[in-house]
Image (cartoon, rainbow, N blue to C red):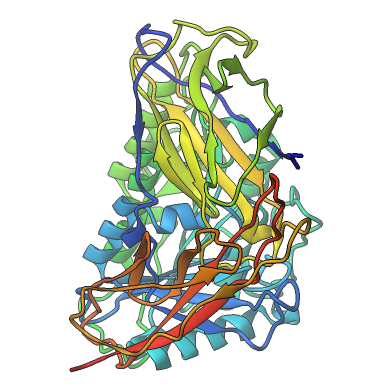
Length: 549
């Protein structure tokens, strides 16, 4: 007897590319899911607002670069979808290390609506997280450090509203695959809080919109906003050839450079960390202007400084300087008038159609999901040689998943827990870069695992308490067992450590870390969907401390 779980793969996107190659190209793995890049050294519960259910506490997680002597800024994100993939990408973390910026990730989000509504406690939630993390980490400057708020999709109006209520603290705003400020094109029954006399004047702000999700309403809303608030500084990056739930290495480099420019132009050379930083307000007249993106069309006016811009300034986007304006323009130029290429999945030798269900069965020993990425024609029914010479690459977007190789993805619980749908949503994307003939191609691969298996024999985990560990210990062995003789797996909810098999590997502590440092490890066993059926075990967590010898 088998109990099959059907997973709906959402395959979205398309286009950009290169020279004609072979039907099967090599697939390289972008290991942004490497365990040490998924470390957050501290966590705190946010008690002023409830989570999504009784078992799902609202939590804020903090990562500080290991060598950071003084924190200079914070990237703050909620838990919509793509944010965690950006925060944990090695390229992004390397850049934040250079800048001495920390990262705060809040799950399931700063506030229930995802819009930063102060009436429902968003400001209280943010303030509680900030002050608690400052207390437990030893980095007191967290209380005052300038913030870059970055959010995606259903939470992408959040950064605009945060900046309106916290203008002196906001270094920059990033709405990634999201909304124009005060957009009339909001999703998820969202609304625009009344700003009254508030503005975001002088704060550099970036809207990123993928070509495959492009909508003219979003552009029109931003022009209306800039006319109503002439002191606002709004940049646009159309991710030409891309979709809604993916990000490229160039996207990451662009975001990093945008943040670096905000640091360069706004932050003082010295700061004592004991009060809010005096950020310089920028002026639109001191930047550069560029036309919006037009699909397969030349810009209506050349990119130039504000004073030299020959087009209508009311319909131009602002950029820090010539570098950012011309970089944006070069992305549009590179992707203009390219042929489309198409990628999708193949399982058991059969090409899967978009939105086709993929059967997944676990026996409690393996949580692997098998699928191969292939190039096809536009019907997604036949393999094709018409594609770029670039290899297909796979990246993690979000969720409880590890990329094992080019055709194996492994379900693995992680810090949001095991008790709600958001924590069980897996997101990957496959993509092929463009070349001189073909445009970029992208396919999202997403599915949601059931929170628990409820059929069959009940299962329990025994997980011995863990004694405190001296700093300098390289690792410890974890020894949880299941009464059904199934292998128990683990994740680190918070603390300077990561999992390799049954080992808990310790990472370097930031120099000002307040000792002792708490580590929380969770043991889990998902159960079996084949005879004998076994239910999901309740997870068991153990906490202990790293102490100085």
